[in-house]
Image (cartoon, rainbow, N blue to C red; front, side):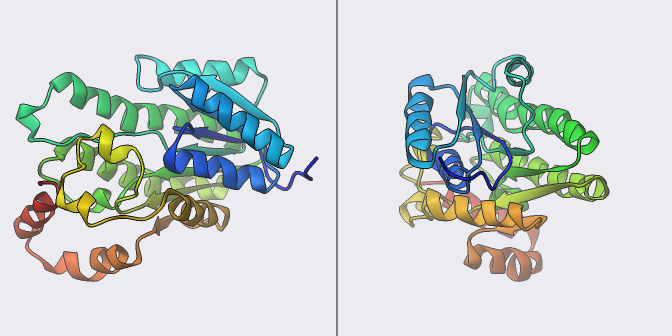
Length: 262
C-alpha cells in the first residue's frame, strides 16, 4: 500500500475530464479521495482504478450537485461517512451556448445553481471546518472567462466572474486561519464541456485547447503551492494581464462573443 503523503480530498465533477485527472493526481501522492458527480458508474470505475493503482481509499457519493439542496446533500453524505476533507476541489460546472433570451431560463438558472450556489455552499461549510481544525486548501475551478464578458455565453461567463472574485477575496480572509483558496482559470480544455454546452462548432473549440491532464496538473500544483490565481494558458495569461485591459470594453466583448459563434 502506498505511503500517504497527502490529505483527504473532496473532488466534485470527478467522473470525467479535469475532475478525474485531479483525482488521479491526488491519489498518486498517496491521498485518499471523496469522488462525487452524477454518474455513479463512472465514479465506481474511477474508484477501482485509483485503489488498485495507488493503494488509497476512494469514497463515492453519486448525486446531482446542481439539484435543489444538492450541496447540502453532499455535505450530509460526507458527514455520515465521518470524513473531514482537508482539501476541497470545486470542479463541477457547465456552460451553455446561445443568446441569453433564446435559451431556456431553467437551464440558465441551473447553471447558476451549480457554478455558483453549490460552490459557495461547499466552500462556506468546508472552509469554516478547516479554519477551526488546523487549516486546509480549497481549489475553485474558474475560467479565463471569469476575466471577460461573454456574449452568447452570458450567464456562464458571469458565473465564472463570480468564482474569480469570490475565490480571491476568500483567500485574503482565510489565509491567516491556515486556509488557502486557489483560483484555477483555464482557457478552453478538451473535455466533455464543449459537447454539453453545444459549443463544438464554435471558433473557440475549433482552435483546439489544452488537455485535461495538463490543466489539472497546473491547478493542483498551484493549490499545493498556496497560489491565489493560476491561469493555466500562458498565452491567455499574457493577453488578460497586458493586452485586454488596454482595449475598449465593448470592443473586447464583441471580440470574445465572436469566439463563441460558429
